[in-house]
Image 1 (cartoon, rainbow, N blue to C red):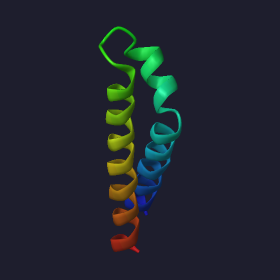
Image 2 (image 1 turned 90 degrees about the horizontal axis):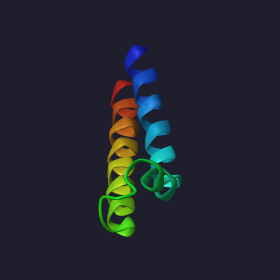
Image 3 (image 1 turned 45 degrees about the vertical axis):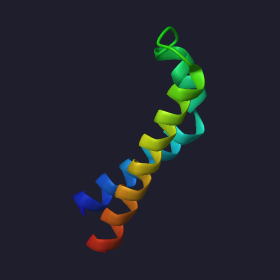
Length: 61
């Protein structure tokens, strides 16, 4: 049960990172180079979290 909740939290965090990546990048990493590269990195991390959480839910269930 705990692993299912952990998987759901990972999926939710991943979706939030994908959806709000430009806003998060502007807020926390404003002076660290190109905004598009930072946004792409956050979207990739969000996608990995979504896939990992979904696989965790799938194989535990």
